[in-house]
Length: 388
Image 1 (cartoon, helix red, strand yellow):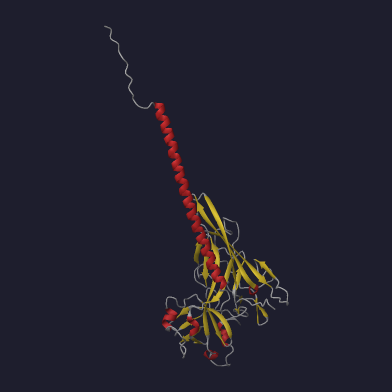
Image 2 (cartoon, rainbow, N blue to C red):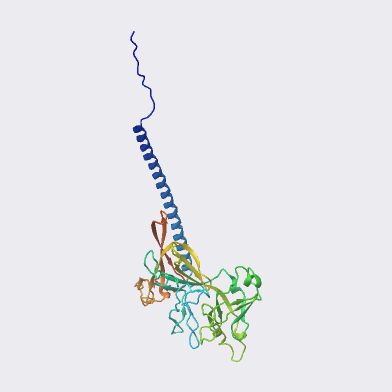
C-alpha cells in the first residue's frame, strides 16, 4: 500500500501587500475627514468673526450717527464765541485728559460773531479732515490701509439733565463760582434735590462743559470743582475754556453788562446747560498684533473705546452756500474739508460717515474687511427755506 500525503491549505489572514493597501486607504479617508472638519471649523470661524466685525462696524456707525444728528442742539444759533482778544491763549479743540492728549491739539476754527471775524468759534459741528489719528501713536497712518483717518466733533446740550431747572447766580466777584438754588416756583415734575443733582452718580462731574447764559450773552466753561450747590470754573482747565484774563468770550464777560461798581452777583439770573463735545478718532495701540480702535472722547474726560478692529474713518459733508434765489435750487456740493472749500459748518445739511472694519481669520494669516456708509441730516446748524 502506498501512502500519499495531502497538503492542507489553511487561511492564515491578509498578506502584507493587502495590509499596506488597507492602511493607505484608511489614511486617505482619515485625512479627508480631517480636512472636511477643518474646513467646517474655518467656515464657522469665518462666519463668527464676520458677524462680530459687522456688529462692531454697525455699533460704531450707529453711535456716531446719533451724536451727529444732535450737533448744534442747544447751542446759540450759528455758534458760540469763545475766549479771545487781549489776555487770551489758544484753545484745544479736541477733548483731552490732563495727562494725555488723545488727538493732536488744534485750535477752534474762525467764525463770525457780531459781524466780525473771531479766531476761536464753537460751531455745533467741527470737522477734522485727516486729523483723526491718536497723538503719540507709533504710526502716522493706519497700517492696514496706509491712510489718515478723519476726526469729527459734535457739540450739543444735554437736555436729559435738568441743570436748566435751577436758578444760577454768580457767587464770586471773579465770576469763577456759580451758585445754584431751587426756583421759587418748582417746575412740574419738581427738580431733584441739589445734593443729588450735582453730586449724584449722573450729576455734574469735573471736566464737564457747561453753557452759561444770562441777559448779557452766553459763555462756555469747564467745571473744575463741585459742591452740593456750586460749580467752579477756574483757569488752567485741560480744555482751556476758563480764561479769566481774556478780553471777551469768557464767563467773566457775562458780568460786564452789570451796573458799574455793582457786585457781579447783580448780573442777573443764570441759566445753565451741560454740554457734550463728542470727538471720534482712531487709536492704534503700540502693541504688536492689536488692531486700531474707534475712540469716543466727551468733554475733558478720558477717551473710551467704541469698537475694536476699525481701520478706516472718513467723513464727507453735503453743504450749501446759503444763496437763495427764487425758483433756483441752492448751490450745494459734497466736500471733505469745509473750510478749504470756502464753507462753514453752518452750511452742512448732511454728514456722510464711512467706517471700515477688519477681522482676522485663520490664526492671523488672513483678514477680511467690510465697509459701511451711513448718512445723517444735521439739525440746528442752519436753516434754508428751499421753497422760496
